[in-house]
Length: 306
Image 1 (tube, rainbow, N blue to C red):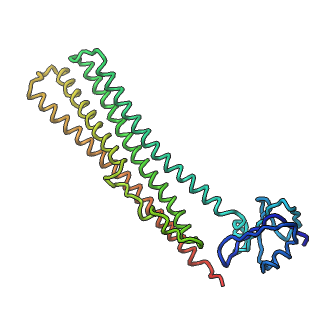
Image 2 (image 1 turned 90 degrees about the vertical axis):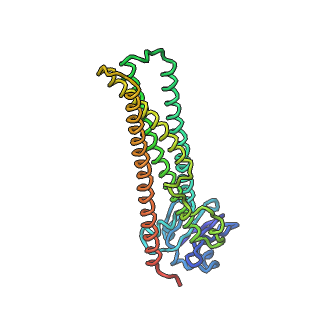
Image 3 (image 1 turned 90 degrees about the horizontal axis):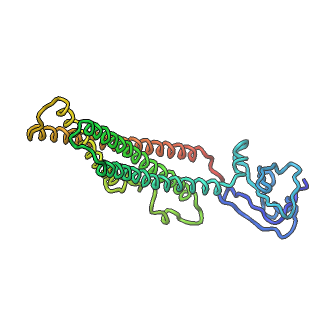
């Protein structure tokens, strides 16, 4: 087998479970290099030349400028080819992508809440600046529709905050899975002492001490006000259309009924919000536990190297 290589040689040591490297000063016969390193040629299953997987027993020509990597067999077939891939590269790319999704979830949370607050401010400002007849039935009905739409937008924003909260949790759990993997397999360092945030320390989605919860409370308070206002104008419109007398007693009844409607809607939205968060968090925990069980099963089934 006339296979020469030069410059850089790296391989994966299955017994030490780590990647080893050497630098070559000149072109060297591969069989001589493997003999010097006490690596039986029969144990080498996959080679990579300049990032392209090749079989070492094929007639592959390499020069001093080529980068050659060697990997041992791990069971045959697709597993051998998988060893030719750099696990650190894909883990790093995956970790960076997940971190970006976590950041994006936080940015979207701020963007969604700001959009709602700006919409509310613009609507209220337009109402206050408009020269409308406060006694007109048409104006009262228009206010009913405007405040009902604002209430619906508030409910939609609340649901988006719930989804973004759980999306951030999912990203953090995925990042911690990669951390746990490195902690388990790291040989040079005890990485468990370096990570304060782990899978067991992810804050609960139903926690009342988070920014997401306080944002949700702010939106709940506003939707309570818009729902109450819509109900008040609806009651006044009914009085106007029915030609009833709007006295103090009628006003109190309309006020109490509107307050009850606003309170009931706020409670409904709060329960829906917490339900979405808790159910999503439960699903994430179950998926995480399933992942751990599968990983433990793989470790248990893996043959012990001697």
